[in-house]
Image (cartoon, rainbow, N blue to C red):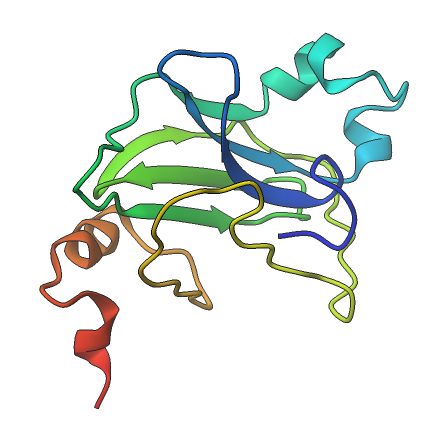
Length: 150
């Protein structure tokens, strides 16, 4: 989710390319000019890798769904944090994200499935961060979020 690039006021998840098995990562980056003022390339910038939550052995496997949840609070306030959950379990919490998030709502985009091959079941966006308990409850819902529809 961003209106710019993957490293500029952005939240994303991806799989690494060179690791076997591939690692799963959450990246959360505020204003690029604030966190990377010298514009170092990502692969040469320790500030880039320190902002990632990396799961070296994610639970993805053929024939089974993996439940992914990202929550965030306070982004742009100087006290932002984000969390990554897989199958209802917390995988990691970012360090404090202090820089602003400069999003233009009219240009912001949620890009789904960029370079992704696989199945996708449902997407939900909530207007607040979910608690650890709520994330676990969502994971175990029979019928997924569709069970909330009337």
